[in-house]
Amino acid sequence: MPVVWNSAEITPIRDKVYEYIKQAIVQGQYKSGDRIIERELADQLNVSRTPIREALFRLESQGFVKTLPRKGVIVSKLTPEEVVEIFMILSALEGLAMNLAAEKASPEEHAELSEIIKKMETVLAEQDGSDERWKFHFEINDVIFRAAQSPRLTQMLDGLSDYIRAFVELGYELPGRGRQATEEHLEIAKAVRDGEAELAGRLTRIHLENAKQAYLQALNHQ
Image 1 (cartoon, rainbow, N blue to C red):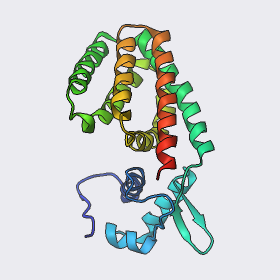
Image 2: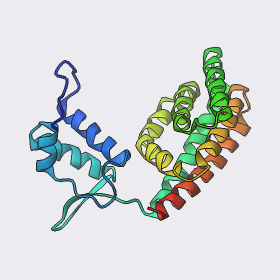
Image 3: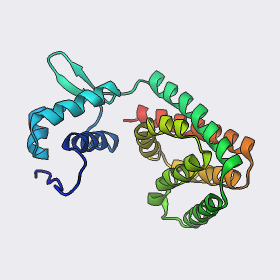
């Protein structure tokens, strides 16, 4: 069924198409090795092939897809070495963000973190709350990145946000990882709220190491 775009929105069609394809990749609708056929996408999205081409060019520059001779555009598969590299960068950047947030968070941001902490504790107390756990990662990061008061740092982390979402969703497929990650996020949020900068950074690095191992393990079972 063709996608119907909201003509009242001012976002250019090329950007909407880019976001649509990128999210389809991140959320697993397109899997590693799948071909992306311009003509089929143009029909599906009810657009010309020009914005499709532009979107695929952007995605290729970011490593989400690649063009192969006689095959066309296919969804890339990250190598274990690339995964390790991305997590290494994340560990440095997120660790710094948590450290800065612990030092600079405003009373309002402390209150936001306290509210998230309460929700996390409620979910952890329930046996069927696993579907909600992954959302806390992004709620916490939203508050903490603001609290860090470093626009350039936030911009760099935003550039990795789609990789982060893919890592989180795949890693959480491992039994017990969703709960473990939520417990890790809980302790990080408490450390930031309580102004314990060094602890917040250290807990973040531990969390990302565990996330990396979970992702690599899940990747090997695909």
